[in-house]
Image 1 (cartoon, rainbow, N blue to C red):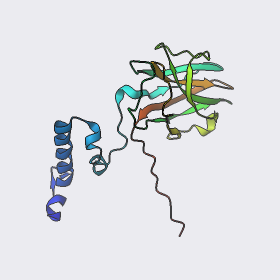
Image 2: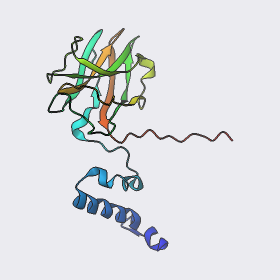
Image 3: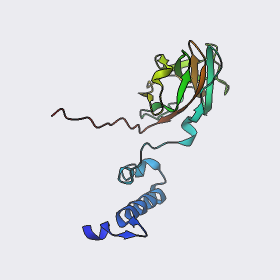
Length: 194
């Protein structure tokens, strides 16, 4: 059996084809991404993402001066105080897609909610999470700015989004990714110290 699974059909192993078939059957039967989550690691897949919960996908940071700016898309929960994860933990992940450049700038990123889709940046929005201040030199491509569980039981206003706070000097370039997920990739391999 093992030698059969190692064979290839047009360059694709039978094992990969079998896994893809299992995923397809799982989607037809369960019609739910969580039902097939156990199969995805065999395919080398990472986090399961919901496109509607993606705030920024290689979205350019704001290059304005010292102020706060709404970045990317907002997520419409449909109601105030909605349990976003329906009893399950939800994680905010922010990564740097393209290095953020600035002469001497430092930046924070915040998860905020508001009653309006154009989330306020004047302090009237509800702030649910804020990163610490990052100097631009620390925000290189591939940097994970945060991967944090959202507070359970928090009251969220209808619209949720990412706000960039420019603290000292404007950015001249850079892009970020920011999204909510129930399946963060937090596992990392470390040497055993032998």
